[in-house]
Amino acid sequence: MLTLLFSARAGLWPKYQAPLAQALDQAGIKARIVTETDAPGTVDYIVYAPNDRLSDFTPFSRCRAVLSLWAGVERIVTNRTLTQPLCRMVDPGLEEGMVEWVTGHVLRHHLGIDRHVLRREPAWDPVVPPLARDRQVAVLGLGALGRSCAQALSALRFQTLGWSRTPRTIEGVACHHGPEGLRLVLERAEIVVLLLPLTAETEALMNVERLSWLPEGAVLLNPGRGALVDDVALLGALDGGRLAHATLDVFRIEPLPAGHPFWAHPNVTITPHIAAETRPESAARVIAENIRRGESGAPFLFLVDRARGY
Image (cartoon, rainbow, N blue to C red; front, side):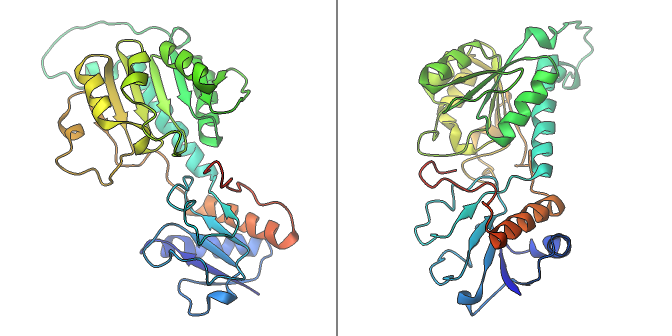
């Protein structure tokens, strides 16, 4: 029988206890799941999200893999004690949630819905938006989440642009890569969606220079990572009129401090990191499948490349 350590923030275990047991049973895996252990050398797999109780992986000498509950691994991948294979979470429920958030807010800005729902005085203002096929929308980051969002936007007939560090091909999406590709995409994009992983190369990607490449009146959506954006540069672009609006779901500090300028800015929409949440039922099936693979000698799904950081 395998021993699994579930190590995450307090309060998460009750949500995962039944779905994880069911997923393991359906996969034919016999396992004992613990939330604490004084015998780390007996643990076969760690189901993990960053928490104060576990930061040193050295004692887990028998552990075959650390299975992250998060899609982003920037808070884990730099841990030098973590020498075991690390798998990030690519959860169908998380993916669907992200697609819904992105398409919903892209359509909100495309259709100019705020003009009507935020009106405080009577005004007959028949501004007709362009059709989606006449609007250019860019997705920066074409991993699992970015790809799905770009495909959904393309299906809505937006002129969809995509950018990634390395070449990608997605039907219906004009894909670009590299520094020159980034500038080309940003210079065309009326709405930009940030879905890049956070690495040394993407930290503050949207700085003063790159924000200046956007067409005047562009909109920025960030459901990816807070540190992809230089906050001061973003506020400057909003105040200077380069950006019409920023809709942000992630921030450098969370919860966003009460005194942060984003709260009071009329052209910033804040959502509290809800764009994509890992769903225990579907995430448990991903975890069970990776354990099944580990036990059968098959390659792990969603294995993190330590050199690239994701």
